[in-house]
Every structure is written in structure tokens, then in C-alpha cells.
Length: 76
Image 1: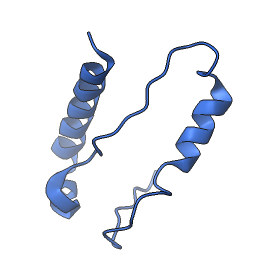
Image 2 (image 1 turned 30 degrees about the vertical axis):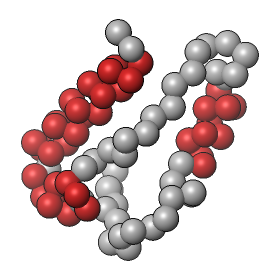
Image 3 (image 1 turned 90 degrees about the vertical axis):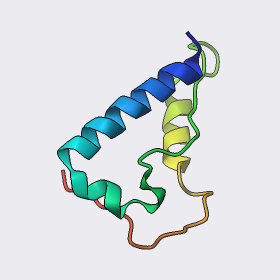
Image 4 (image 1 turned 90 degrees about the horizontal axis):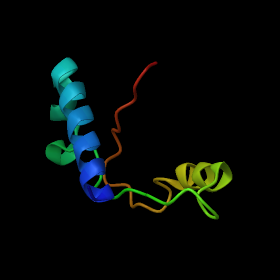
């Protein structure tokens, strides 16, 4: 199974569960989408180490143009 299909399944299931438990969230999202279309996948080897993944996650969202100022905030 291609990695892209696995990611699609994970995003679909998690979004469906979140929307089922918190119906108000979908109305607050621009376009009604919980996830962006992108994802990152790499093999475990030379480049797939913890530091590289940590750096990737820290940089998420910093290069995107902010289109909505009322972003959702989840209290955990």
C-alpha cells in the first residue's frame, strides 16, 4: 500500500472522529478541512532520525501565509 494512501486513511479517520466528538469544530474551520494536503514521509535510515523529524515538526506552519486570524486553540 502506498504511503500516501496510509496517510490519507489516518487523516480521514482522525478527522471523522474529531468532528464526531466536537461538531462545532468543522463550522469553525476555513473550508471545513482539518488537515492540509501535505505530509512528510521518509525511510528509517540515514535521514530518518529523531533530530531531523523534530526539526521538520518545529518548522511546520512557519512558511504558510496566514489566511485566518481566529485559529482554533485546543486546551489539553
